[in-house]
Length: 342
Image (cartoon, rainbow, N blue to C red):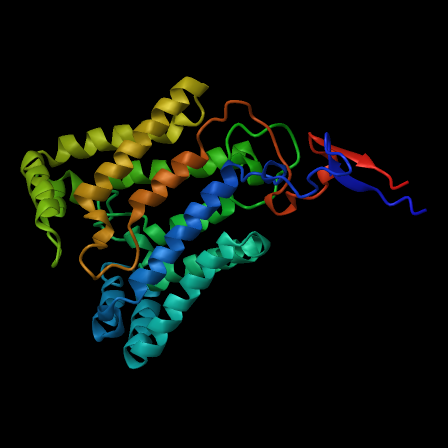
């Protein structure tokens, strides 16, 4: 007889239930859940991209506007791209929406998650330059309140940190460290939040009315309740640009170094990161403008919150098998035994 082994749930007899129990299938771990949230955000971008106004010249003008304030080396390719989109508005916008749809679906399907994450990095870098003007980081008006360094670069960062492969070595203290290692993951967090602290104290933000003017600028189509929140916030910031920008920079700097602190302090700074992300998302970015009909992404708020979740210290740090290899080797799982046919 063949010595081929078959897997059978322990406790099942010859006449018992032979189907695979739902509990036998591997549950998605935290990294996989975060990948699915990232995929959902790409699908939201695809939905926003097919809004009717995106098929008009307003979209190309929006792209061209990101060249303002940038060095010529950065601005000229942006203007060229905007002109190309203006000439082929329907086709180019449909293509943009299709790419984002495929990225979202590709991340959601386990078999294509690697390809989709890799493609999202390339796409994000291109859009960050040609669509967002590098998030305005080279302009005098860069501010974390209004979304610097740009939402799309955070998609690329998340793709790197949530890559479905574990780095060899000791247990990872948080999900973001599993693919690239703890020192690199902490360094990227420090770079991101440290740059936000730097942007917060730029001269335009330190001006007496700097932050107040940024917050009070209302977008067309913004709901009244959201506009009211922003106007009240602007009134509180009136004449307090220097104080508010310095306090914001200190809070952002605390978040930046938080991942190097012991676990309880690290968790406190991550909660602070979520609060800051939510506050700037609502007050400064008006939910990314998604309620105005003129936005192509939800802004930096949800992405920064997702990043904070990826850095949340695990209760019991451990490395697990790569996500795309889960579900194999069932006989090694608890509750299963290997038997040979008689």
